[in-house]
Length: 112
Ligand SMILES: [Zn+2]
Image 1: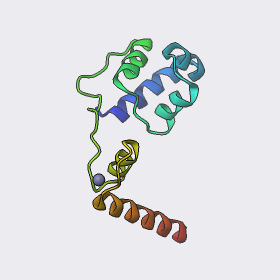
Image 2: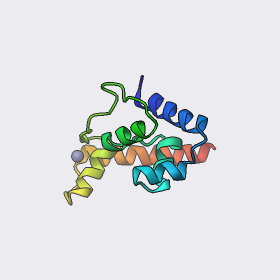
Image 3: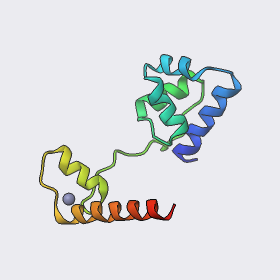
């Protein structure tokens, strides 16, 4: 089972129990926007939140389901963001990745 599938399962269990998302967000101590970003927008909760969420519903967390902390690599969009976050100059591979991404984004806007 992937993390996304497990999150979907947690969402279905919540719905079955007619538990309000606002209530569950309150139990977990997160904002409702954060909670719905996990349920509806494919954002991954961190391990602490995922465990608390599963516990609140009485579901065991499958082993190895939580993504490892990811390291942003150069030549990717997240690599560029890491440079910016650290206040570093953006290196050439990252700059190219960002330009490619923006070009693809503009192309997708034109075609729609
Ligand atoms: Zn870089």
